[in-house]
Length: 569
Image (cartoon, rainbow, N blue to C red; front, top):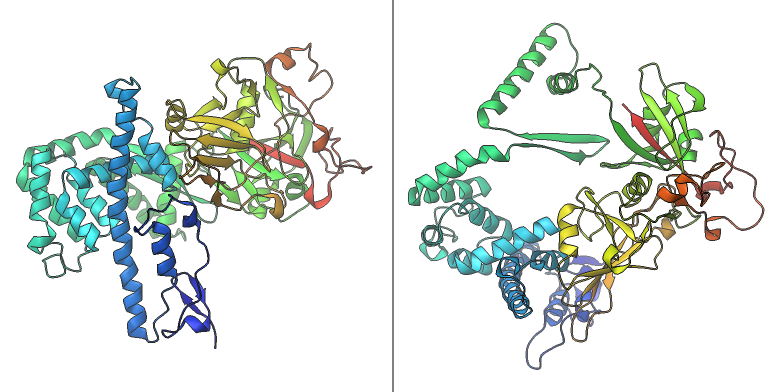
């Protein structure tokens, strides 16, 4: 008899059809809050859930699929209450410490985000949701707790009533209350989807305060923006938030152009013709290229030896090796020195018939781990070469669970605490995370790890670890993809470690004649060192990859050489 996939994973045959279950294995929740005598802990509930056998028939299995949904809603309601209680306790502690009233509560959302393994931005939204539910919308909270609403739909209700006063919000909540049947299984919205619930909430909000709803609509024009998000298969989603009239006009113009092109025999799809027209109109060139820099990171083997190791495109993520080669080498190489970067790195210029300039910048990683070599500076601010080093090494904000773009180059140990301006003491952070890190009670320090690793400690004593991502070509066994694991915290608390996807890269410079000399101007701005551990032991042949001037040791398929390609498009 085969094992059956149950609530906690694959269950042995003995656990099927109501047979006794073996004792549940320890779960990550076992490292949580110290148990209180006579009170069930979250770990107890988790073990009980894991021990539930899978039903013997299809009807029972569907019931078991449904019941955990109620548990998830109940857990979300409990998390909301706990988050509000935590916010209140932190504000009291900050007030006792003399923190000004307007600054009290700083850092609470970040701690909630870390605990829930969410980004800081989402942590702030979750805390706002919790406050609204517990203080102004008790009926919606009750519907969430009973399983009549899930957390997402409760979020929609809270968001759509955000423009109302507390009194009007409470009135809308009461109108939609579960005990009136609106949100219950017998109400008018029974089985309704997101759109139907949104429509009902908007109508109720408008009836209560039409002026506030209209005012929010008028102010929404200030939120117009353009965003870019990665999409699968080396594609990207360019989104524009526009006033409805402008959005309709843009779409109509693109549609008209696509229809005209197709009527004249263009074999592109309508959507492809619209997308091409959009790119051409914005960039001013048919191919859509303009004078911008695109950082494409790949191993030398991928670039020159048709290796299958994928590359990494800054701001996008991993891209297939063949796509990276087509982007770079679908053109003839024109040997010769290109302009050196700000830290003195020699580059190779590759220029194709399309006029695209491609500059190759050699960077080097330690064998096996993919650790970037060191760059130091005596300056207060990170010099351009060192900033680029951090940008390529960290890729996105280094705060656990935050994947926002890097906006600040931060001293992990602050400069005013004698923190040096080095690659080891530097990290890339988004603006919000950098400000949060400066909140009293937060601290960070570099710690040993497979690559550059930072330990973040919160005011409650919990610690979280962030390991930089691996450079393309790093062996899988050394990438440090273990995920989340317990870490030491104060007695009676859960210490959680967030080891993100290991991503690290080699330094952006290679020392040449006259470079790296302590007496040179380059050394004052940022010097490059090649530690012994970055070299493979024993005699090895020299690198045979055709990069002019490359003398790095050959490292086989786990080589220590990588290439950063800033495409001047």
